Image (cartoon, rainbow, N blue to C red; front, side, top):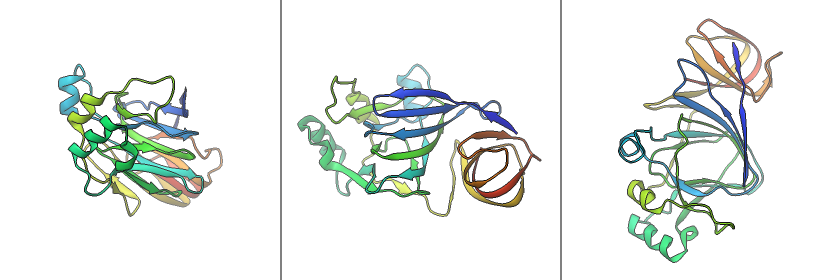
Length: 232
């Protein structure tokens, strides 16, 4: 297995470690996000919209795996039931965005799927792993009136916004057009059935450290006892 070394990004709300794996996973980006403060409320475009409006870039579909959360920590995961796109646009104009947001309590091990157009934000006191299309593209729609103000992308955000509530993932696995993901309990030994990315989240694995990303080839073996995330 090959260890993938991260690039650290320090931001106004905390830190992100970016892991860029090599072929055949170069279209994926894996992040560890440590939120010391609330992230902005945002939406992502899909591939079709991004291609037309962002110089041919990819859109962004992503998923979150909660690695840790302080008591009372919450995510924004879609809009409240019954809130329409027009309602949200009016709230943006009036400065009452927070009244429209669907806040959800989070716990370690929770999994959330972030589809294009879904309003979302990571709350204070949350550490998570994020798997996404490999593009740095987002439309910020609300930033809690932070100073100095950061750029907002209201028009594009409203173009792509889907006024729905997000779908939390049950059963420890997810498969979409861009990636697949599953939790796996290693009991002594695991042999990789195909090329994949492996991220240990708990237990003991000898020389493999918890919280490090590895790129594995078919036939590679992992020894230890604990939980890993398998992605491709």
